Structure formats: C-alpha cells, structure tokens
Picture 1 (tube, one colour):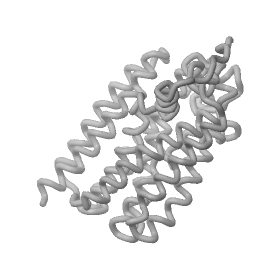
Picture 2 (cartoon, rainbow, N blue to C red):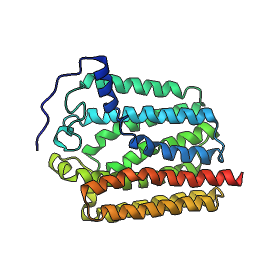
Picture 3 (cartoon, one colour):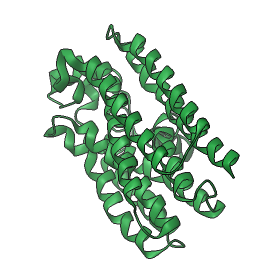
Length: 298
C-alpha cells in the first residue's frame, strides 16, 4: 500500500482550473447523471409530463452544481484516505495538487451558486434546500460510522425528488416520498457495485461500505435492492395512472439489471465498475418510459 509523493501546486491559472475540474469530477459525469435521472422522474411526475422549462433548467444546472460541491467535500473528507486506494490516489487533494483551503472555498462557492439559482422558486423549495445542503455536506463523513453509508447517499442523491414536487406543486405528496425511497434502494444497489471495486483497499484503511457489510451476500443484496426500487416505482406509476410505455421502461430497466448480474456475480473489480457506470442506462430507461407515457396519453 503506497501513496503518491506530494506534487507542487499548479502555478498557472489554466493548470489550476484543470485541477478544479478534476476535483469537481466534471470529467466523469456519471455522478451527475445518477443524480439527474431521479430528479427528472420527479419533475415529469409532479407536472403530469409538462414541467415548466425554467424549472427544468434550474434543477438541471443545480444538479451539476450540487454534485460538483459534493465531490469537493467528499475529497476533502477523504483526503487522508484516498492516497491509500488504488483508484483514488491521484485525485487532486490526495496528491496535494489542490490545498484543503482551496477545496473548502470552492465547495462554498458552488453551494452559494446553487442557492442563488433556486431563489426564483417558491418558499417551500427554498426551505428544502437547507436539508439538501446538509445531506450533501455530511454524506462523506458517514463512511466512518454507518454500516451502509450508501443508504445515506441515496437520500442525498434523491433529495431533488421532494424538491421537484415542492417547486411544481408547492406540496410533497406520498408519491414523492415513495420515489425517494426507491432511489435509496437504487443507490444502495449501484453504489455497492462501486464499493465492490474498492473493497480490498477499504478493508485495509477501515472505511465502512455496504460491500463490506453485506460480505458474501453482496450480489444478492444488490439484486434485492434493485427489485425493491423497481417495485416501489411500479407502485408510483400505477398510483399516478401510467400505462404501457411506463411498464415498457421498467421492463427495459429489468433487462439492464439482469445484465448487471452477469457482470458482478464473479466480483471482478473491472466488471463491477462497469456495472456501476451502466446504471446511467437504468435511470434513462425509467425516465424514457415515464416521459413517453405522459407524451402519448396527453
């Protein structure tokens, strides 16, 4: 287990901006997409398929900003651990190419921009931004004490769901909380696949993850969480009067998840990471089914 030798801080503005881009993970958009799809589900359901373009734009930009802020905070929290993990040892903070103080200022700036972005929305949405920020900022530290921090991640990544309902309906009905619960199960599934990649390193440094907690039942747990997420989303679809296109979207998601099983069943690290990345298509399939169903039904 080795760490990178600290490298000099970038000296030019171009070099510094490149490091900030890596710190915000803008070069790896999978996290943005996994955060965005549940938000889009909620925007379409809350508006019966006709969300206001301005609200959609606010939530899409806000997703990018908050995910970026979350990545910065995550790397700040893990700066003393990432150097010991093969996949993360070259991150800007771990490699000391960005200072902790810079990272905190960057995270604060992104959070302020996110807050300014939602000011045109109603009071309930603005109030919901407070717990949303707390969840995003506190998640990275849960890996020290929660056995399944991925469940907490699911709440943080899914909080755009109740916020979307708040923005479009000025209320948060039971369907919104059900969708949030579904997102928690989905996040535990895909982030366990992600954690299976780092399990040997995490065991050495004492980080808690669902892959470690589930142990030899990790594959079964992933598939059960997928099943729970889809079952809850199916209930929401039925409760909101959705039809054949929505069902087709869920069926496509089931097929994709079946493919994930073939990738993770042998616990090969590269294939587990591929399965994690492939969850983008699961979210997209569910959204496509919902959007098409509302479009066709008028």
